[in-house]
Length: 178
Image (cartoon, helix red, strand yellow):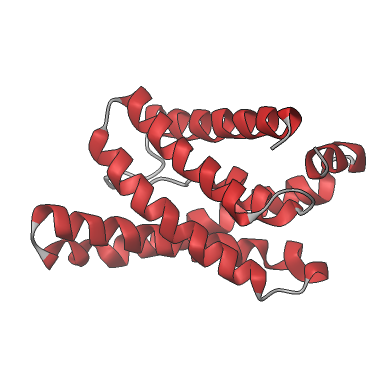
């Protein structure tokens, strides 16, 4: 890995972790525990869709380190565990969706890719909670979490789409070809 790509990777990790931490510190959008938009996923979606030197393994590294750092900053080991499993599941679904999408249509499906990631993130977190607490009753919370995941995932997908379509070409080319 070049020093330049390593620097960009570190920058993306910090941005994604900062967005995740900021989201935990802000007042909740809805008064339902554990419901968040998933702003850190914007960085993951960006890396999965920008192309160039960025591969799925780079997005995985950024996503997982974001979860670790945000968990350490907020002091929540449980959030870190839930985030790691949910983040890996989300990334797998978003990468699979991207692999089956034609390159010229990638920005069009970004909101749906964000929704898929959010749904799989919730699934990973619920599975982790069920295994950790030893009960499947946590899945009773699934309808609420899935409904909010659809909204949050669409939002992160739209933000990523906006960045990829509105950012200056020079900026995107600099990120693509580090």
